[in-house]
Length: 138
Ligand SMILES: [Zn+2]
Image 1 (tube, protein in one colour):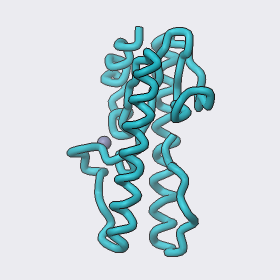
Image 2: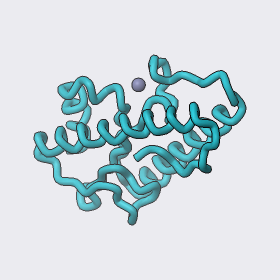
Image 3: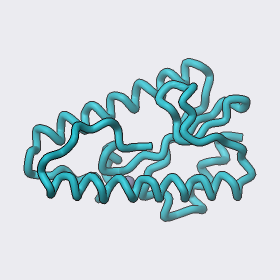
Image 4: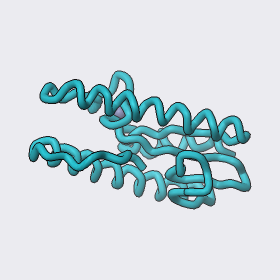
């Protein structure tokens, strides 16, 4: 996933925040991996041979999944989608770049005929909902 390339932060509060958010992202991916396995969907992780290195993909069946941290990738209307007040311009530029990159990745994959699913970090707290959304990939 999900923590796109960042320059090394110098501000300790900022780097603590980045660390925290990054860890929840990884946990969300593990959650999705477990649900995919339970659903009997075969997949590879971090598929670098596809545009945007999807977190999960099956090239034969032409689907790709991105598991997005709500904070980094700006889950609309989600309480985790906060914006730090310090260095606000830095964050806004960072977020805009992330969202733009996400859009491009999905567009490239769709142009190749892939179904693309975005699963938000907060959704993984509700596995049955995720399982239902995965049905689209069959
Ligand atoms: Zn969310």
